Amino acid sequence: MQELQGILEKSKYSYEIIQHEKPIISKQDGTKYFGIEVGQTAPTLILKTDKGFFALIVSGRRSKVKFEKIADILGCGKVKLASPEEVQKVTGFQVGSVRMVGLDLPCVIDKRLLQYDYIYGGTGQPTFTLKIEPQALNELNQVIAAFD
Image (cartoon, rainbow, N blue to C red):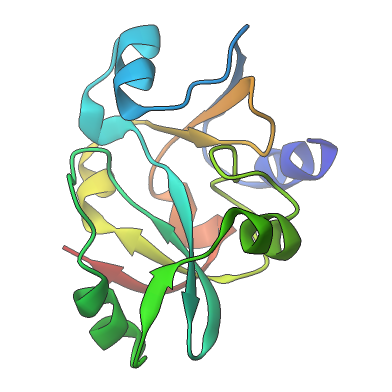
């Protein structure tokens, strides 16, 4: 968490790290707990491809991710979700609490997130959530693509 705090303090974006008693597992839990639109929830998914691992940050408003479309964007033959073991190995975090900024992976972001003043996502700790301006994703990650 200290590393994340350091990254955030150096940025020009406003943010808040919010502590809660129980992990927030689903987008429904997040909308209820924070009183936000489902589109403001921003899970970080880890993708396994034939070109390595990528982070994908999506809007909770998206009901399904089209992996074929992501494969085209990345120029990959195959794209799938990394296994929980792979996520832990590649990021150091468990599935469901992968942090939204500062990962050492190339990143693809969902443009739908940019319409909000703030988005909510992982910090690496299951009982903490990061609230941040979505434009920060571009500066604090290795963004290589965005999609609609």
